[in-house]
Amino acid sequence: MTKVVIVDYGRGNIRSVANAIDYIGVDVEVSNEESVIDNASHIILPGVGSFGDAVSALEDRELIDILNEQVLVKGKPFLGICVGMQVLARTSLEHGAHSGFGWVDTKVSSLRVDNLNQKIPHMGWNTVEVKRPHPVFTNLIKDDLVFYFVHSFAITSLGFPEVLGISNYGIDFVSIIAWDNIIATQFHPEKSQDSGVDFLSGFVNWSP
Image (cartoon, rainbow, N blue to C red):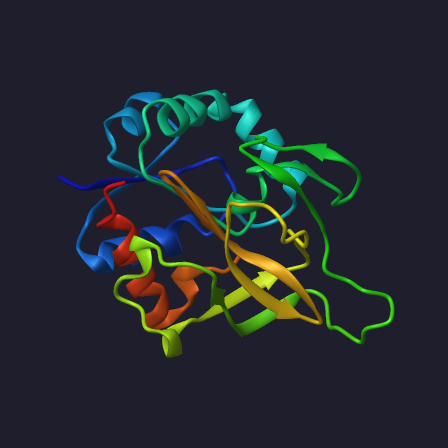
């Protein structure tokens, strides 16, 4: 039986994500307790705000070690959203240098490019180019791959094997990473209307 836990570390659109999962009709709980996370079949790590602040909040609650055990060792399906994707990187240059989980060997940097007239943050709808098939996208067709973004930093290095989706905002950036039992998005599926519901439905039905 599918039971989703949304990791509560005091950051992120937790209630919006919970409402989206509840709308799909799947049992969902918001918690930072190890026993609750251990009893879940699927784990979601949301995120809003800065990389360093998110990592500090997770460390303060001893959640990184719990996630390492549940996701990397036990192999539970995991979804990171926005900053919940970024913290999986090795480092970030947002407001200084910060260390992340190191699950993927890349870094997070600013979307701002000096010679481009971009509005930062990148806020609004954008397309996602998916580079290879993935089970979470079973219910989505190519024309559906438009999602809602709100961010100023991103993974802009595209040359690592975990890259699944790419978007462009003046420059190309990574909008989805995926490998093994892990998938993470720079966009907010909980804000992405029908496309987001279809994506989240694919995640909660995913059994890697």
